[in-house]
Length: 265
Image 1 (cartoon, rainbow, N blue to C red):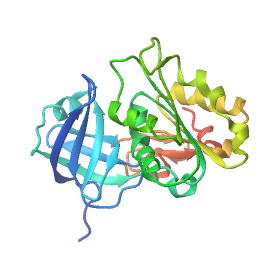
Image 2: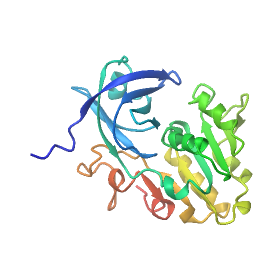
Image 3: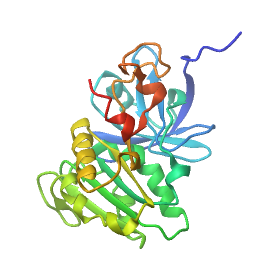
Image 4: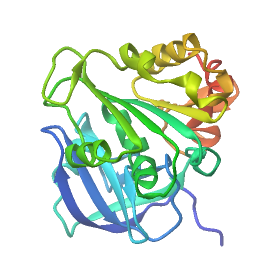
C-alpha cells in the first residue's frame, strides 16, 4: 500500500537558538535531499500544521527560523531540545541555485524573508569564485534583526557588498530606509549580462523591489521571487494557495518575474 503523502513523521528537535523575542531558529534532525529555498510542513499532534521555509541545512539537520504569530507557532515555542517535531516534505522548487551561482548576484530580502535565502547566501560565501554578491537586507528595527553572526560573516567576505538597513531608524552598521532606497547602489551596468536578482519578503516589499529593479534596467527574466503565500497542504489539494491556475505550493514558491508579475490576487 502506498504511503499517505500528507502523513508527517517524527523528528528530534536538536537545538533552539533565539534570534529575537518573537523569532527563534529550530534545528531538527533530518536525512534527505534539500534545496535552497524549499519549505517543509511542521506539525504537532492535536495542535495543527504550518508551512515553514528552510533557513539552513546539513546532511543531518534542517533549520527553521520561525516567528511566533499564531496557535501552531505558540506551541512550537513551548518545545525543548529532545522533543519530537513532526515534518513532511521537502516541498517546492526552490531557488535556481545551479543556474545562478556562478553569476553576479543581487539578493534583496526583508524581515523573515531573509530566512529562505540564508542557506543560499552561506553556500555562496563558502564557495570559491570571483563573482560579486550584493546583499540588500532590511529589518523593521534593531530588535527585529535576524542572524547577526551571519550578517557579520557575510560583511567580512571581500566578494560580498552588504547593505543592511532598518525601516525607520539607524544603528551601527545599518542604514535607515527601505531596501528599495538602495537599489541604485548596485552597479548593474558593470555586470553586463552576467547577473541575476533574488527577491523575497513581504508582498508589498517584493512588489516595489521588483518595480525598482525594472527601473534600474534589469530585464524581467533576471529576477526571481519567492511567493510563500497562504500555503496549507503543500500538495496542491486544498486550493489555499491557488492563484488563477497556479498552485504556489507546487509550481513555486520560487517564480521567475516573467511569471510572478501575473500572480495577483
